[in-house]
Image 1: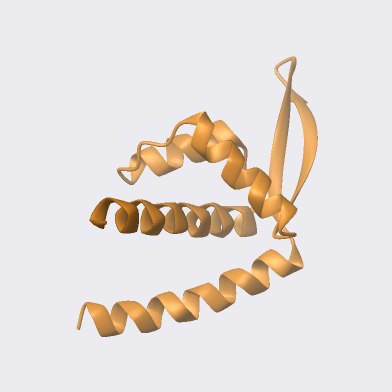
Image 2: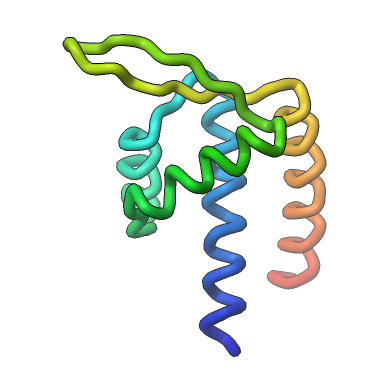
Length: 102
């Protein structure tokens, strides 16, 4: 049971982290893998891309393709819905952290 809870919380943190960065500016998969690694998360492409696609399907991200160094790269940026969701989640995180880590 604790592994399921840990995994679910971990994936939720990853989603919030991705949404946070996408609200600041365009992000791409490998960039987010590296960013999350700096915070101690070991994320594979098999994890990050379904998260990005899920956030896009939910209307929180939109994507665009650009060619960088001759390679096609897919960038994601937060939509208005994604920014609203992030604002709501931030309030809930603050409330929860204040209570749990009191």
